[in-house]
Image (cartoon, rainbow, N blue to C red; front, side):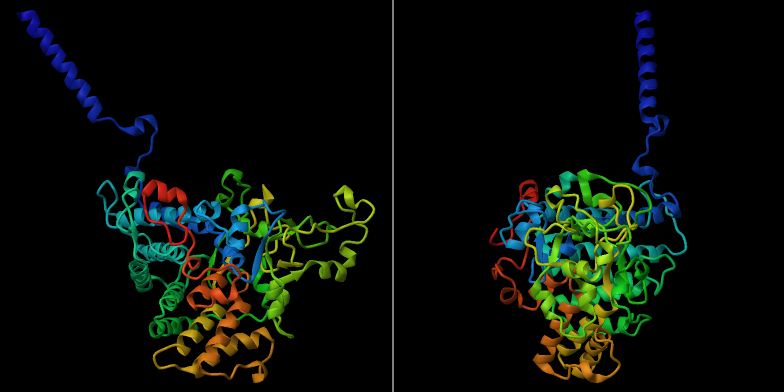
Length: 515
């Protein structure tokens, strides 16, 4: 009996020791990092805030889609099977199985989840520790701007979308979400932007950081999309009266030397600082993929030629090129006629044989793309020396996401469409943009129309000023012009893109009408 007691006691001691070992287990003993290690210092908060910016880069296909889906551009590419998702968007044969749309849905929600994680542990980290530091509120202004930006992207593309803001969601939790009404999503966007405006600084030493003006400009745009013209006019006026100005060299604004200039309200930053690339997730590199997409197919010139070859995607239409009137300096900076360029610059091409054997006796300096229009996207045309590593995936070109000219035109529309219209102010802002476009300092190119005619003039000017920058589709939809302007557009269906089929199957959410 005594022996049994001793054995029992030894077993109990061993059990207690084993339990203690389990309870006291520290993942650091095995060099593992857990989320208890996150957000322990100011540096942690600032580093993680940068990661909330990153998915904006992955949304680069939103810009070409915003023009390809309209009368501004065609999909282009090598042939009818090249980049099928963009071909389907161009032809209005798109289905819920579309790689580009799926990518943008996932990237936006990745950004939201990152912002929510920061929000979830704003006051205390997961270990319950509070980390306070100077500038923390302003840092969170950036987080709330970014969350608003991601939700605005989603609501413009897909309408009603799942809405969650309190915490980062896991896969199981995400399966329980249903779509929220667009009005509710906009309400949250407005709340986030107002929170951001209250704490953000008016300037930032580090280029690309969100400022108070950027948040006011985005909020003005959000209000305009909801037809809240009085509020939009008031909000946008803050930015109109800010430190921005129209640059005289319109084309130079889209060069590397023109990035983050006096007209820039907010730009999405890209880099080629390291040769990172990932063909398995091409929008996940550090560079701007859409620049490579826009390049001239098979371009073959001498070393002094500034342009690099590309994939001939997102080709401007003749319709867009012909919309510019004589003297408008924006045309040459927006669309490039490659044949004219070759003929005008023979020294860059003469004597250069094509790599294509078919042209051995008759040198050809480019390959005609699918749906060839004769035009290329000059604003984001790839240039030599602006990439690294896997060159196609690492172009450093920033997206000029909100420009001062855009703000002026939004403000002009808001004042024109307000409850008590102020067409004098609307004309003033519109004509500032037009005088830059025609390089004049007098009223020779001014619009003097009022009322409905002025409204249409503002809309038409937006097309010319912002061509190939991704706003055309959304402008046509929100202003009710899409069905009349876009071939293949079906009213009541194509105002929205289809929810990715994978999300329908995983979460059981309802698809958009017509898909």
